[in-house]
Amino acid sequence: MTQKRYTFNVTCSFTMQHTCDESEIEPDPGGNETDVEPTDRALLALARGLEELLSTHYPVSDVDASSDSEMLLGTADD
Image (tube, rainbow, N blue to C red; front, side):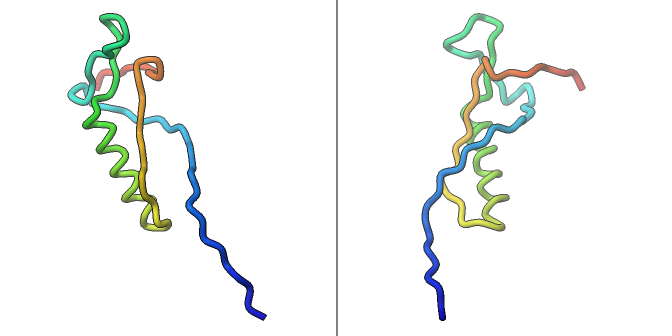
C-alpha cells in the first residue's frame, strides 16, 4: 500500500554568529555615536550565501538576515 506524502512550506528561524569586516559596518541610525551595525549589503550577501548553502540539501527560498547594534558580541583586531 502506498502512503501519501505531504509537502509544506515551513518557516525556520535560527540565530547564528557572523563576523563582518570593518568595510561591512555602518553607524546604527537609532543608536548613539559608538553604535554600529552590519550594512544592508553585508546582510544581503550573508542571506544569499546561506540560501545557496542550504539549497544544496533543501529547496530554500526567502532567506532573511538581520542584525543591529544591540546584537554586537564584540570586536577584534587582526
